[in-house]
Length: 183
Image (cartoon, rainbow, N blue to C red; front, top):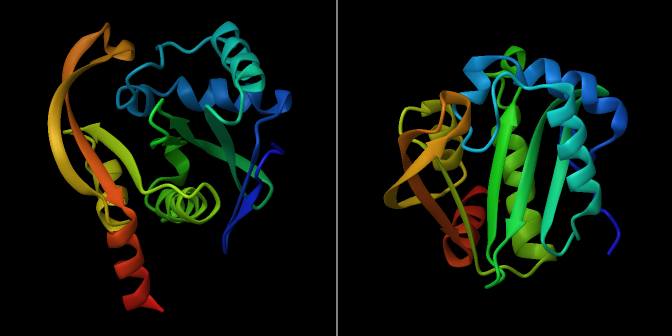
């Protein structure tokens, strides 16, 4: 499988590169970003970034796809899908703080959703966010995700503090109905 580069009106979703390392580390060393992510450590070291980029490069695309989000040829964040054993994609993402509030993550998420339904043939997609992550929950709601439950989840950046994670899901029929209204 070849890496699926995706494009939106303003963004390019491309493969991560080694030259993204410095910005990944800079952006993830902002506690306002990492405190909303479950598995990312804080502080975020160069060794953390090197390990993660190597892991991304060596994980089969049938299990996980990690896209660099690029705006005007600048790296601004990451969006990923992790494919469960049942074949259900789980979307995860983060965006550097200077780019919050510009609609970039909603745009990137919409394109990854399209990819999952149209190119992968998914019937449903899952996502989620900590209950205090209002920005991420807005991205999910804007893209049609519906709340399906709550569960405890640890936040590594907060010393493995247990947080409440809101689980969400988007089904193919709901996505198709939403698209029919907007077309």
